Length: 540
Image (cartoon, rainbow, N blue to C red; front, side):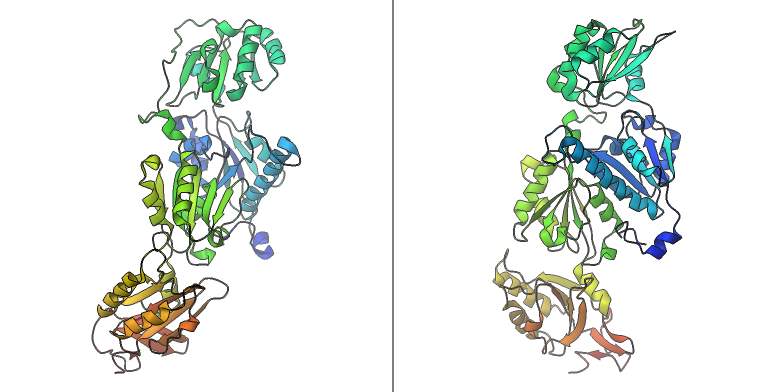
């Protein structure tokens, strides 16, 4: 099975022959990649599939921690929650939406496991300590081998950041979720030796009220993003409600601190010197899916698609991307490239991990140029943009018939939507006079029918009528056809938008074999050594 094949599509015979893969719940620790255990790093590096959760904004803390241990060739499954704290129109409400997501996500991972792949499901902190991993474990561990790699919890990291013990002697540590009603939280706090309150964020006003009502506020400390370059430490009473992220914890130590608490002054900055807000920006990745067959989508592109929160593109191309739970899809008409690029950049500016899809290679008459051009606008200067190459349509058609592009060649689009026909005609004439093979993109559409005939006449001014012409239609798709004709016999009625033409040069030859016709453009000039080879030059 290829890497680009969607899991779950193997035959029954193949599935029966493969031993199931193993599910690893990998604890990554509180945030510092150097606090990842040796075993966790080893499992991550060896896994076939790396899976991780995130909210809809697409930023995954767990993946960012694990990034130093990932490598090329691994598949990624980005499991995006449909809701976190926002409302939902799901008929089952918030819990119904979450339960449905967990079921769908579990089946995505189950398909990999059934195919024999090892899956490392990443978990910040410890996999069984307020972690998303436990929901997958409940749904998969009874069907597949599963093992937990424990991680350092945020409670331990917060204690280390404060530089003071949480408990000593016979004292008992109580771990509490900040989502508890404030009156219940206050009752627990009043009756404990020491406490760690997790799940803060929007719950912090209630947490602070509970600390105050229980008489514990003066001895409570707030630690945000413990162990990372954005760590903050403040007295719990001095924290602004608007500044509290989910990844923060309030600690009430049992012993009285004997050393000075290293409070943080002002906002934190990342270790690499960037402003903390920079890390909140997502990215835009422009990818090429290849001409048609899933086998021509590269593993690099497959990983980018799996890791995306948002897929943006022309409807026909987006439909080629497998649907993933929680992943948002933005479909549009093929004539709004600039608008599509701007939308992708806006999504990334808000934190999304966006993949813009093109057929073939994104840098050849496709979306890479539009995205990179739009990204030059100052409003998107901080948004990272990457381009991942793909198999071009010209390469795919050429491969089906031999090597017609084996020497110098040019690529020209006949579309005059973004450039005047006069410019197209000048370029056709210039390339035809230069005696290069020509790959013709976008030759015709339902509204453009005259260009192919006009192009043929322009090329005939410089090329022999017997010059070979390859017509490749829907190559890599279910209706694939490839045939060879001559420039004189080229019928514009046989050409549509799904056709790519390759017009040969004077050194382009046609060879008839028992296995079919082959076409190549020689890298040498002169008379062919084989008399059975037909070229336009030889037949004059």
